[in-house]
Structure formats: structure tokens, C-alpha cells
Image (cartoon, rainbow, N blue to C red):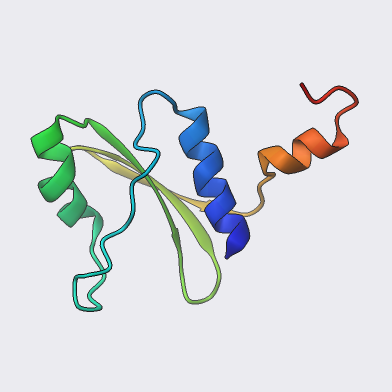
Length: 97
């Protein structure tokens, strides 16, 4: 799970300045999971956001990347089979910076 959080932060850094670095999922929804459509209606549409990248992990530990166009566009879903974090890539480079 820690690697998934690192992946989310890497994606946010990659998309700067067009991302919300400090976005936190609202946990005060009385244990109810919010769907992508809730985020589109509650956040994306009022703020004028046109695209959303969402990473989710299922109970079977499978990782999915969803690319959605707000408010009514298509949603593409990809299963992430493997990934490399930026810190792992920096660790194997001869000159990381």
C-alpha cells in the first residue's frame, strides 16, 4: 500500500502545476466509498476540471488507473501490472540529478 501512495505522489509531481498536490479523500462520509461520479459532480464540475486520473486498488490487490473526462465524457480503465517509482529509478542511475 505504501508503494501505491508513492505512485500517486509521483503522478501528482509529474502533472504539476495542473494537479492538486494536497488533495485528500474525504473520510468523513460515514464509511461510504465515494465513486468517480461523486467526485465529478462535487469537485470537477464546479472547479472547471476537465480530466481526472484515478488510481484504485481492489480487494484482490489489483491496481487500476482510470482516466475520466468530466462531466460526461468517456472513462478509460487500465489495469496496472507493474510500475517503477521515481526513487527506484534515481537509485539505479549513474547521475540521478
